[in-house]
Image 1 (cartoon, helix red, strand yellow):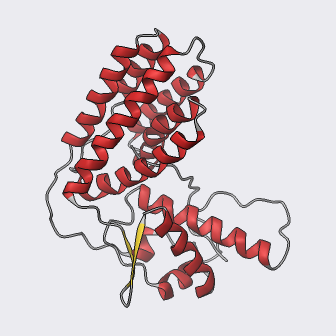
Image 2 (cartoon, rainbow, N blue to C red):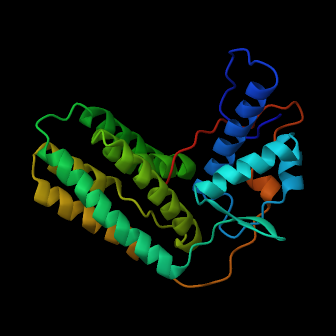
Image 3 (cartoon, rainbow, N blue to C red):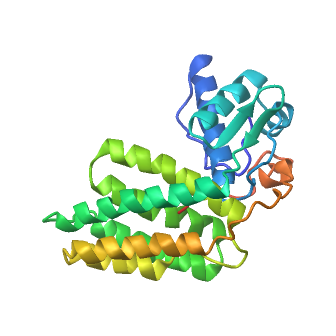
Length: 259
């Protein structure tokens, strides 16, 4: 398998057969998810099995397992007799999901602000600094990943695995919505607002932390252009960044979810 735009390969030898195939599935799932989260593959885009087999250099069995996983994560839709498509959430669903995020994440920051210690805080603050730098440099893909990771890291800091996993699914839905409805040239997640939320948590001001998170997510939603316009076409091979003739990815890529 050749993986376009993938992280450096693990140098640990892989066992043949099942384990190698499982590694292919996981790598392709991570890469294709990243392309969706970073808005390189737009909502509504068809994902033909034959094209994916050619791009990734694997058989249909591997691709079908990847598509099943992505469907379970609600990133794609499998439509009988039509194939696989990147999910295209409606305006109504978009409003509902943002409302759900406000409920969940208000609870997250309230819980964290009430905690007596915040051992995770410095790591997240450093990440916000990276987020600011990525935004300054115009590195949109990296910025999107870090902006989403901020929200997931707050959920992880609660040490509530069920909450963290549920919020991960909800945030991934939001990423699709941003890809579909964002206005070019806008940033739907503010670095300054992230820092204000961290300051309120550190101060133990849970009422302010909750209010800031709610205002932050409302602001993200308001920046979207919520209308039922037709989906934009995507050149799948170009979006998935084919490898060079020597098989070397053109640039490294990690995968995280957008805010």
